[in-house]
Length: 202
Image (cartoon, rainbow, N blue to C red; front, side, top):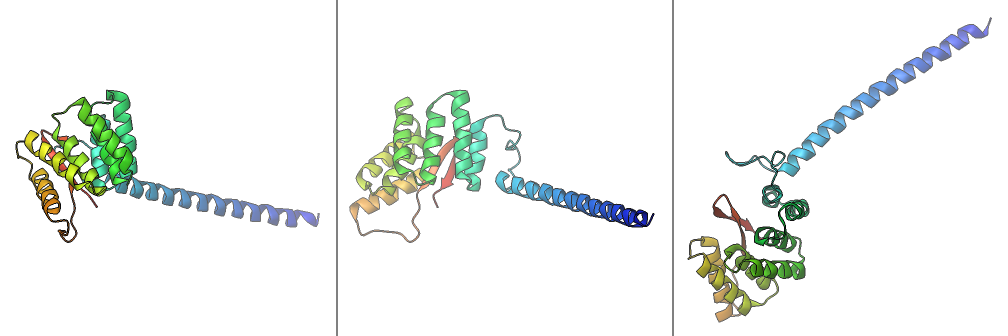
């Protein structure tokens, strides 16, 4: 008989501990949900301009990859480009995109091979020529880079200010090896919405 109150107290304490555990579990789960939402928002990047497909709703891996590249998520962009290549095949757009992502990740050898292959697929595609020129500049191959930018400029008919600026800088450096502009960057370009979009190098 003396043990019944003690047993009741133990059961009450266990119920309270269980309640506290369940409460803590719910709070942690809510916190993780909010964290996942925050991370998802960060990966998606800034809000898209009006008329641009949302990353989560986009079917085309190239669209997803371009958005991720613009947001600085190069590894995720590369995965999206691989998905696009699996769906569309290794065409000039997917090869150029994969090469450009590898350039952003510092994999210059892979980037060069992929961009040269993109040019083999379509020798008239200015973004592939321009982006190959950026890779060559990173490798200090100034002479070949200048010729590559010149080809991109001719194919583009001089319409892209970024390709024109890349060519100007490469020629200036070729004529005067001591030439260097402060914080000099070369711009990557890609096809998108009927025009060339710029992906500035870091």
